[in-house]
Length: 154
Image (cartoon, helix red, strand yellow):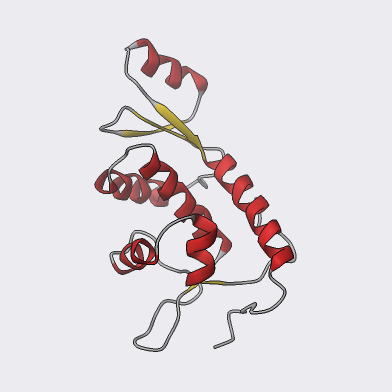
């Protein structure tokens, strides 16, 4: 899926925290530690602002959903690293966790196997995160008539 048409090319920190539903401290920590760095513009010292892309927001929402599901940040870091290493895009991927590991499911049979072993799992469909984010940004876009930033703006 592509970025929604008509959307701005970048999102500043206050917008990101509101859209994703995380605190400034969380976002700052995740950027400083490399969990999710802004792909458009990272902070370059005092007075500069991070600028996040739509894809960055989708990843941030995915991280938040995993945290909300009880997965610890260390496991999320490992899972996100693995997802980044995959040759194929994460869209269409479903993530499952038994509380101590996170799995990427490629077919319904794998899900059935996990459940048949009696393990409690949760699933997050990456497409659903993406679609929800698109809807949120469409609503935000209607409210957001000024303050739009492009990659070349300061």
